[in-house]
Image (cartoon, rainbow, N blue to C red; front, top):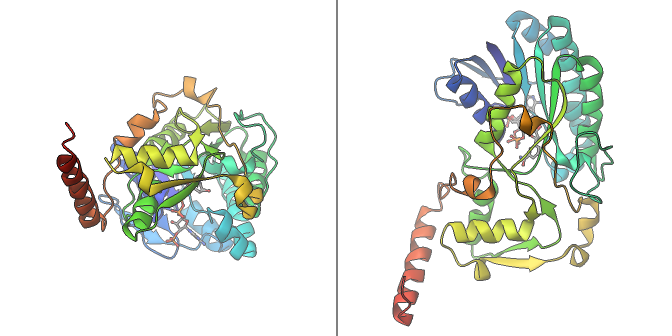
Length: 321
Ligand SMILES: NC(=O)c1ccc[n+]([C@@H]2O[C@H](COP(=O)([O-])OP(=O)(O)OC[C@H]3O[C@@H](n4cnc5c(N)ncnc54)[C@H](OP(=O)(O)O)[C@@H]3O)[C@@H](O)[C@H]2O)c1
C-alpha cells in the first residue's frame, strides 16, 4: 500500500512511518519545516500543508491508498500563542485532506485528541459529545466534524491520550520531559487530581497503520493504554521504573492550587470499545509501556550519577538489595 504520512518529522508521525515500513508499505513522509529523518524511508521532504493548492497537487500526483494525518499544532499553549495558525493547521488542513481522500477513494486516518472533552465526566466513549475547554480542543473537535462529513465511509478519526515513548530528539516523550527537569535539579510538580490514560507511541502508530489496512473500519474511535491515572501517579511510576527516588523527584499539587488549571480538562479517561475488540494490536498496560522507555539521550550521565549515589547511600545504611 502507498501511504502519505504527515507530521513525519514529529513524535508520532515518525513512528507511523516506521510502523508502515515494518508492515511492508511504501511511505511518503512529509515534515513541516524540517525534512523527516526516518531510516529506510525513500521519499521524505518538508512540506507546508497550509498551502492548499500545493497540497491538492501533491495528493493528486501521489495518488496514495491512504493518508495518516499526524501534523498539528498539538498543545494548549502553542494554539493560544498562534490562534490563526492553529485553526488553519488543526481544522482547515484535515478538512482539505478529507475532501481530497474522498475524491480519490483513499483512506484517511486523522489523529485527534482526548482534549475535545471537558473532563467533567471522564471515561468517555466515542459517542459522547465533545465540549472543549480551550482552543486546542476546539480546533481538533471542529476537524473531527469536517473529516467525518466527507469521510464517514472511508475515514477513521482516532482520538488519543498523552503519548509516551522514546523520541528521536530525546525531548518529546513524557518521561523525557521529566528527565530534562530532574537533570536541572527541578522536581516535577504534578496534579493528583488530573486524570489521563497514556499510550505508548509505537503501539499507537501500529493502530494507525492497521486502520489504513482495514478499509471497513471507519468513523470515530478511541485509542490509549488500558490504565487511567493521575499525572502525579504517572510521574511516580516513571521515576520508580528507572529506580529513581520518586519522593524527591515528583511533588504533588492539586488543580485548586493552580488557577490556569481551569482551562485544562480534569478527567480525560477514554473507553477503547469498540476499537479494542476489532484490532490485532492490543492496548497496553502502563507496565508494558514503561518497559519500552529508555534513559533519554543527554540524560545518561545525570542518571548514572544519581543511581550510583542511591546505591552508595543504601550500602552505607546497610540495606539489603
Ligand atoms: N503528543 C501527544 O501527547 C498527543 C496527545 C493526543 C493527541 N495527539 C495528536 O497526535 C498528533 C501528533 O502529535 P505529535 O505529538 O506527534 O506532534 P509533534 O511532535 O508536535 O509534530 C507535529 C508535526 O506537525 C508538523 N507541522 C507543523 N506545521 C506544519 C505545516 N504547516 N505543514 C506541515 N506540517 C506541519 C511538524 O513539522 P515540523 O516540526 O517539521 O515543522 C511536525 O512534524 C496530533 O494530531 C496531535 O493533536 C498528540
